[in-house]
Length: 171
Image 1: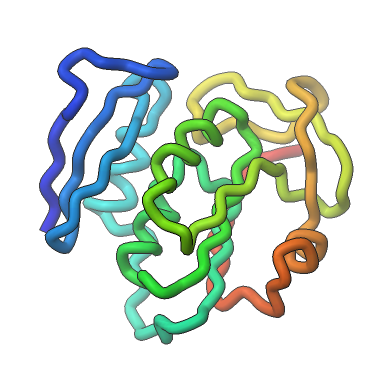
Image 2: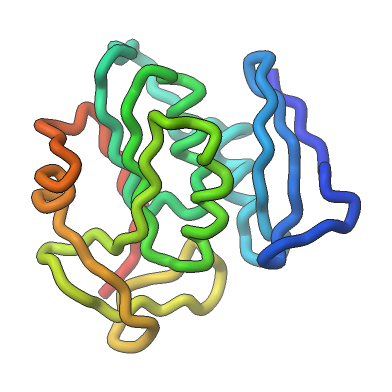
């Protein structure tokens, strides 16, 4: 059961509107930008349920990796469906990451990580033009910290990921 209402009444931060959603009898306060495509992503995840998994996944001590976490809606969806999972929510865009961090601060089971996942560690260029869900690694853009999945696993002491969602763009 999903209840969705605009909570902001004109209040905005980072060009975001604040919304309250109620899922499984629990309220979540989230921020979304009306001009960057965030509402379309919300629709895909919560109404169309594009990340619904039609088979049971154990809910205890699993690790979920959300690559290209955008503003955290998929990580929120996974947290609701797998409340005991450790979720690693990785987003390269600074603008998206600030909203993601705020949207996911309710849970200590979710780690918000400001990186671009890449084949090696270092710095890459990240282009933040267009819709917020199409930002990408490119030949131009903002310098952004890149991290490999292997380094991420070592840094956060993760032996394996049980579920990996990848939605990233780049050259």
